[in-house]
Length: 45
Image (cartoon, rainbow, N blue to C red; front, side):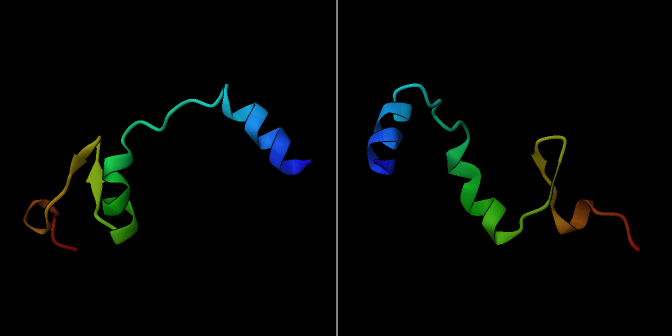
């Protein structure tokens, strides 16, 4: 029953945009305002 409900709901699901960036998110790459931040760009703490 759950499988059938999932198949029916799948028709209205939106596609993920930016899925190519998912690997960077998993790796923990920092970003600010949608741009990747390098270690050189970060202010000293």
